[in-house]
Amino acid sequence: MLVRVAFKNVNLFKYSNTLHFFSTNSGYEALKGRLEEIIPVKKEEVKELKSKFGHVSLGEITIEQAYGGMRGVKCLVTETSVLDPLEGIRYRGYSLPELLNKLPKAKGSAQPLPESVFWLLLTGEIPSFSQAEALSKEFASRADLPAHIVQLLNNIPADLHPMSQLSAAVTAMNSESKFAKAYAKGLKKSEYWRYVLDDSIDLISKLPVAAAMIYRNVFKDGKIKAVDYSEDYAQNFASLLGFDDPGFTDMLRLYLVIHADHEGGNVSAHTTHLVGSALSDPYLAYAAGLNGLAGPLHGLANQQVLLWLEKFKKLLGDSPITKEKVSEIVLKLLESENVIPGYGHAVLRRTDPRYLCQREFAQKHLPDYSNFKLVSILYEVVPDILERQGKARNPWPNVDAHSGILLQHYGLTEPNFYTVLFGVSRSLGTLASLVWDRALGLPLERPKSLSTEKLKYLVTNS
Image: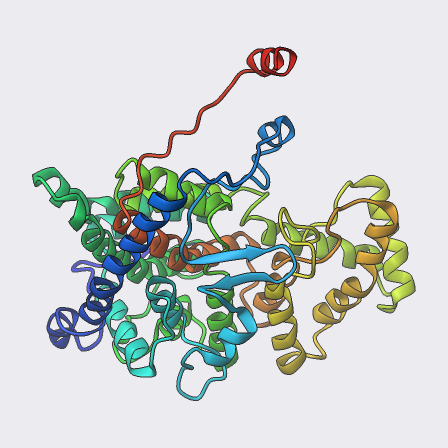
């Protein structure tokens, strides 16, 4: 029987008497102050670029691209990250290996603080440990959920997919939007970004609590611990979920860092940008992004990979995990299925660096784990098979091919919840981008569409 816990005053904190003071005078103010210095410079840079080179074409659009999901069409501006087909993702010019080395680490950990990624994506600067720590405390001070969100999550059907629950909660949180309230009263366009930043930090702060409530309600006993003001973002998230293994917390830090951003064309980022361009507040914009992330061709893919691996293990049976046996099963599966989940990517043409970061973590911390051994052999044999059969333009594994087994190893064994973790992480990138959308005054997104008949007319009369 599922036990649900309603929080009367919704106070999920320790040390609550100190929180209000800190939230008005540290992480948020320091970050906002730095952006106040950076934004005018960037706006002038964009103004000059448009003035001098606004006429320069970024390339032609083909009919194939119009029907093919606009693949490769250069038509978005995203300041936070750029995805290169060969190098992979770069956050503000830094590769993931560089970031894992340069970003401030949690005390006693080899993994970066995810809050430092948010600082970097917003400012373009590697924060100091003290700046990241101040942001940790800022997030903890704002994590309290409104009473109606707690009630919503406690009353929502337990069999509703966790991503649907998270999306509903984030949508309903828009009752707290400072941007929406200020806009309704009349707000200068130049001030939009300040309120979007405030809302974004509030939302990022609350997501782990909402996600943990969903996890505890659906899969456990419905009870949730308090947020600890003295701990960092990932440590609090792990504790809220009910995990006290330092290895899990370290893995979670890595997970949150590498999933945070993937330039602006992916579904969750683009959807957040699109809905935000209507001046919908960050809660509504990111709820839309979460609904995109929930699709099997986007964030839900990590769940599908793990389910596929379980099917693969049943076919493997008691046979030893060898290249020969794995290759045999892969070929059989390809005869009945068109794809192998976790292999291939819309943009990347090499092994996803996010995959390699997780592989390196597994080699260090769980080298003898049977699922890791299977994933490793798949990595050795699948690309060659796919390449020989012409099954994928990019036969290399992406991030989803590895993340599930790390979560399984540390005891988070519920695949339906995996995309929720992705959703918490992706908020760091999409909401940082949303702040910059408003800082640069980007307009309502409204591309032109044509019918098939109109396209036929254009090509036959050109």
